[in-house]
Length: 377
Image 1 (cartoon, one colour):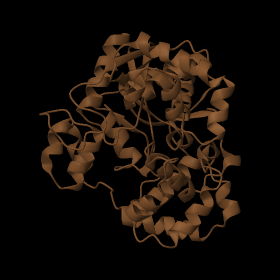
Image 2 (cartoon, helix red, strand yellow):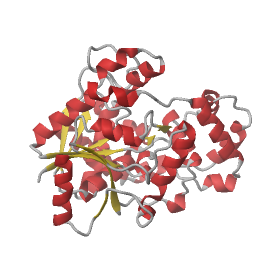
Image 3 (cartoon, one colour):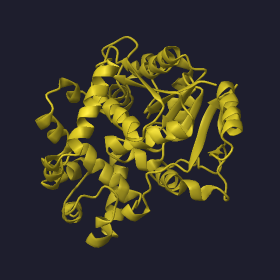
Image 4 (cartoon, helix red, strand yellow):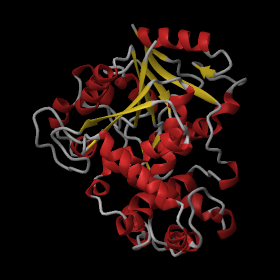
């Protein structure tokens, strides 16, 4: 069976994602579409607006199989997000990987990916990193390319870099983003909007979001989570319980930032106030938010592994079921887990912990143990 992988977050799944999934399947001539999706915490360093079980069910409006992206991928920079996604696609024997981009030109994006890999080997690059310059700043200083100024292009280039580094046989494909920009905050089109705009519409109790998603998913979007002040309270509690030494060992914590965090949490009066006080030219808001989520989840540097030992299935169609059966026949040594239990829970330690903490934040009760794989007949 031929498959195409999509590395996704679906926060939430909308018409743009549906277009991406359907077009990817046609473009790749695949039998099966696999979504490798972030779990309860997403790359922008926040809890997802809907839990991973709901979002996996939503995704079946357009894909055949939903696999959870390991938490380490979700709470990392674009390179490690891409690496974990590509590793998972390889683990699932995907034939193609299809991503959205502002460019829509795969060969141009490949060229930039190759240039960046060459740049990363230079001594000047390593020195700039030591000086505290951001990756994006270094890349813009050395590469005269407008492709690096758009968010979907940047992530797509990260996928292409990882495919080259891993010498993967997966064929990369890209689809040009339609109608709306990644960071648009307002809905301006009849049927397409960015995830940011849809989330804002939900927060504002503006029903316009309903036109931006597949109708079958509307009932799954009745209880969104966006309570930053509840998140702030949990962060305060977590940070107060740690010292500088323990915080310095948190994954993605940059040297010295733990002291800034300890000092700032004592005077911050809200989540937004905390973010404003932590922000510097060196650190983006997204980086800071990912650090905070790793602190909240207590993900330490010495427990992080950027490898794939098993795949956690969240949802599937009958076609997805057929692909899993085929995969188990062709690669019987790979651990494809459809139901988490005590015997295999050690494979998903971070993901299970993230579910429990997400439930504390949202006062929900679905766990990895009591929620079976959703199968769409």
